[in-house]
Image (cartoon, rainbow, N blue to C red):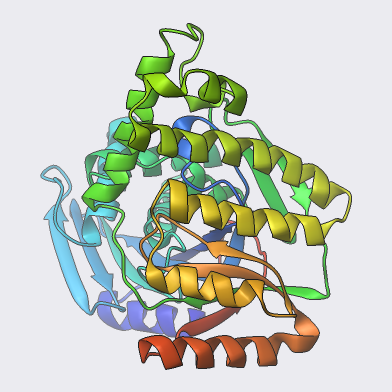
Length: 381
């Protein structure tokens, strides 16, 4: 793919590009906890967005995405949010130019192998790859966390999605064969080895497309904030659900609307489950870790209500399969991928059994992606 990207860029723009890659991510535990200042457990994977880029010196931002076969172009001083994938690059360039006013125009060619709408954070990878490339091309000297925060800012103000920092962080900070426990309040992080060579990470795509820009995502965030505003009357130091224990939540349960209570209950128990699960991994206990993944899915489905019939079906089938140690819906919800920890010696049987059961029920075959944990954003030389 890299040779093809360089060749196509040369054909269209007549010059050699700088090429950067930034990966999608899986999140083993800690879904919807990031915007509640809690903890997440992501890892970068071996599926990436690739950006080829060169200066054009004509104060134009020229974009072409191979996957969509679409072009966008704008003078760099007239950038504003637009519909579609280009808004992520417009936003990144807009905020980079605020930091570096002398920034000039660039020509950009985009390709990749991250399935769009599968919950693997293709939008964060797109922002990260683009920001990483601009940073390198113009020698801006920004750090990886600087770029992650610009990506989050772009999501908030150009894509209108009030996401947390996890996706951008994971795409930029990933390390091979390690997962990251990220504190979404302090942004401190710890690398935890994920060394289970007899297991593979298998993503099963429900083929149900979702959009984080949908109202449901922002509704969940508002419901959590409502819970905090009420509980703060009784727990004055509470700034977010991060500051509220499951025991405190139960103590003041009657103060909350039942729906708000369910949302809060999922978040506070998920944070506690994640911290326990990190210790399990350090002790090599993948079996109990996998059981906690199933518990996370039950919370996502029954308490946070961001699952769907298709995801629930796949997790139920995985829980009964001899090869699966753990499984849960991953990403924002309402479709996308289910992440599974699967024994490699039964990988083919697992995928075949799951696809067959899913096809019998929903008349479609879920795509399967076998992934490994890889490096974060990088230059391709």
